[in-house]
Structures are given as C-alpha cells and as structure tokens.
Amino acid sequence: MPFPILPAPLARTLAARGYEEPTPVQEAVLDPASQGRDLLVSAQTGSGKTVAFGIAVAERLLGDDETLPPPGAPLALVIAPTRELALQVERELSWLYAETGARVVPCVGGMDPRREARALDAGVHIVVGTPGRLRDHIERGRLKTETLAAVVLDEADEMLDLGFRDDLEFILSAAPPTRRTLLFSATLPKLITALAERYQRDALRLAVAGASRGHADIQYRAVRVYPREIEHAVVNVLRYVDAPTSIVFCNTREGVRHLQASLIERGFTAVALSGELGQGERNAALQALRDGRARVCVATDVAARGIDLPGLDLVIHADLPHDAEVMQHRSGRTGRAGRKGTSVLLVAGSRRRRAEQMLAIAGVSYEWSGPPTAEEVRVLDRDRMLDDPSFSEEPNEEDREWADALLAKLPPEKLAAALARAYRARIPAPEEVGDPNFSTESRQSQRKAAADERGAVPVGAPRVGDDGPSVWFRLNLGRRDSADPRRLLPMLTRRGKIGRGDIGAIRIFERETKFEIRGTAAADFAAAFERGSPDVAIERLAGEGAPPPKKQSPRASKHRREVGKPKRQHG
Image (cartoon, rainbow, N blue to C red; front, side, top):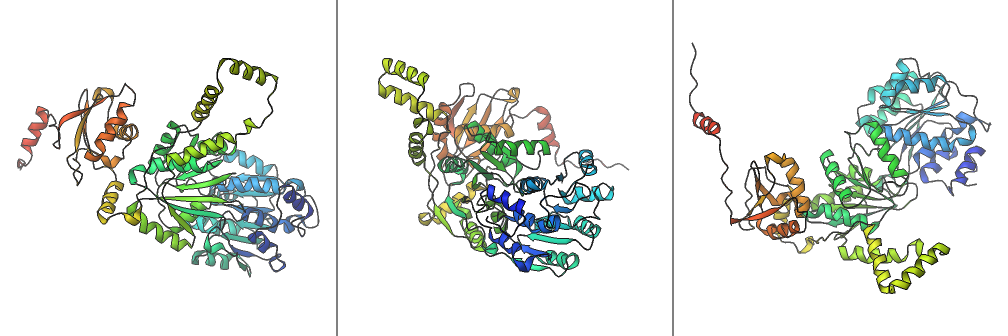
C-alpha cells in the first residue's frame, strides 16, 4: 500500500483511488516528527492538502479502531474560507473516511441553517464549514465543541484576507485546549504567525518544498494579443488546447457576463461564476462542469476561490491578474495533486512589462508566443476527427445497412465531405487573429495599443487619433426599438468584429442610430455586417469626420439660453 503507516481503512481507500505515493505535503504531515503535534503548514492550493490534513487527524479520530464510534458531538472541525471550498473538502473527507463509517456534515453560508441544525442534532463525526456559519451554530448551541479532538484551518491566509479574524478567534477559543490544531496557509504573513502563537501549542512549522515557487506541474504561457482580439484569442486557445474542463478569469462581473454570452453564441458549453449569483446558481454551474454538461467556466477571482474541478487542465487569464499572488491562485485551479495543467496569460502590448514582472515575482518559467491561429486549430481538428473513437468501433448490422445504402447512392468523396461538415458543425469555429510581435513593434504602435485597450471613448464624444478621419454609419434601430448604448455597443462589436475602442460617438434618434467608427476599422466593420442577419442593417453615410447634428428640442434650447443667468434674489 502507498501509505502503510495509516489506519488500514484509509490506506485501502487511497490505494483504490490510485494514490501510488504521498505528495510532499502529505509526506510532511506523516513524518514521525509531526505525529500528534500542532502543525503550521505552508503549502500551495492543489498540493493535496485536503488528504494531508484528513490523514493527519486520523490517529486522533480512530486510534486503533477501523471504524468510528456512533455519531454524536463532532470529533473534528475543518474551517474553510468559502462555501465552494468547504463543500469540496466535505466531499474529499467523505470518500477518504468512507470505510470508517464517518458522517461528514457541511455548514456553510447560503445554505438552509435549519437543515444543518437537524443534521448536527442527528449526530456527526466531522463538521466542515465557513467561519461565519460555524460561529452562528456555536452561539445558538447547535454545534457542540467540547468533544473536538482536532481543528483544521484550511487556507488561513484567505480567511484573514476576507475579514474572518474575529470569527476564527471565537471558534478557536470555544474549542477545548486539548485539541490538536492544524493550520494550513499558502503564505505565512505576520497575522498568521500571530494566530498560530496564540492558539497553537508548540506548533511544528512545515514549509513544504516548492511551495514558494508555484506549481511545478503548471506550464505558463504568455500570449501576445491585440487588445481588440482578446475575445478571439480566448476562443482559439480553448479550441487549440481542447481541455475537458477550462476556466477563464475576468476581473469584473460585467466581463464574465459578456464573455460567457459570447462563448455560448459561438457554440461552447459555458457557465459563469460571479459574486452576483446565488448559491443555488453557483452549485448548478459547478455541477454542470463536474458531470460534463459544460466544459468552460468564466469566473471572477472571488467566485473561483477554492473550487476544484476534475479534469481542469487549462486556465486562461482573459484579464491580466492584479498581482502575482492572484495569478498563482488562479493558475492553481489546474495542475493539482500531480496532474499537469496549462496557464495562459493574454497580454496586450501595453501590459507586457506588468506581465513579465508578475511572472518574475512568482518565480515561474514561461514562454512567449502568439495566439493559436485559425489554421493551426483547423489542422488539429482534422487530426482529432481522424482519431475519433467512432472510427475504431466495429459496425453493427444496422450500421452496415446504412453504409451500404449510402455507398450505393453517393460516391465516397461526397460521403467523406458530408462527414467532415457534420464534424465541424459540432465544434466552435476558430477566429482569425494576429500576432502583435512585441519585439518588432514600434513605440508609436505600443501607444496605439494602450489607447485601444482603454476601451471606447464615452458615448457622445467623437473619436480622434492618428488613423485618419472617422466614418459615420446609420443603423436601422432607434428609440422606438429600445435602442440604448448598453445594448448597442456589445451588438456592434460582436457582429462587426471590432473592439469597443473602434466605436466613437453614438447618436440615437427615434427610428435610427448614427454612430462613428474609426477609419482603419470601417471597411472590415461594414463587410462583417453584410454577412450578418438581415433584421439589423447598416449603411455608410456620405461624408466623414464631423458628427451629424443632433436635433435639440425647444425646451432644451430654452434651458441652454437660461444657463448663466443670475438667480433672482429673495429677501
């Protein structure tokens, strides 16, 4: 067995799960010097921490027995920063302790507290929860702490960052002094060491080898992109890697909503995770990823804290992270517990230095490249089609009858072409993208890229620059069609294949809208719309540069004339 010094039920379970040898953090907690002691462990997420503290407390919970006593007051308490992480830990400990008869109960914010109270009253062995909900159950007398033999703080640094210090101190003060306390944290700032000194007894500090240099099983790639093509680059990276599960990070909720909608429109099965979603919606999204109904998750940093998804082989940073720590936290969703993973940063020219600084601070190796091209994706698609398992399956009698009927009517080349079309129809089409190639980019081009990345100018302000005169277009939608800039901008950028920075002033009238497109993008914009749906039509207006006059109502004109008049004094 790979873990011979463990209680037999846990060793058998790990062997059945394919654990051949312990990870560094698991080996550290099993070391004889660690046995029975409080531990302060610095280890990255994805290093096998859940199994590590699960096996570390097994001796306290089981002793020499193979099964736990009947459920009653809890024997162990695990505290995690987020609902998703707590529920993930609950699932991990449930299978790890399956042969011992353990009853593991989650207590997390956003779930029904009355149902949790009934579960606690029915008896439990291990409770896993978030700080606020656990404190609430303790204060109401629902969660008994007198029998706790072990308390585990998972990702303690994140709990302090989220403002749970008071709750943690309350919970630790309520636990019996004879308990064993294990504190796991990716980093060990002063607040963490102060917490350890106050609530742990002679803790052994374990710095797991490699914790400070990120994940060795993650390949980092920095991909050069034009700012207006970031969305297209996301599409091509997803298609090129073709991971069973991928996560794409955006910095804002609005970015998550827009990118998820765009990916779904292109044919991806994508779900969203952001702070505005309720717990039920978040659970449904995660379940869709776990059972394969969705393959792409678009998320913000806060929403993705602590989630662990099987087969997550690819992380894409659509928006550059704020710092190196956030980058490593995002990337740590992949390359977990010995699996290989890829982390891709999409970097516009104006952000190159920032990206290189983050990667240097993180101490990770990385490679620069351009985004996968549409042709590269198509070549891989052809290879993947030829490797499709359906070609290696033996045909049954009905398959042969259908094949004979098709061959009798159609030549083989037509059949092959129809098969290729059917295969391509199942997969999202790649996008045409360019490589800005920073090494040959002029200083002026970098300034232009920086201006593009800042996005569209405010609605109503004409776009000016070095690209020549702008071009005005007319759209057959107006106020009577509920047209407004928030709806028009996404539609124009998506259908016109341009970035928001290419759109200048917008004038919305009763039956139509006139808008300004930067000169260099106007031709491509018009061509893209010609291939679009007939219900939305645009036409290029004669004359360039000056925006059309906007009609003013008599009331607005009167108001303008009155501006600046001294107010009548009352006395």
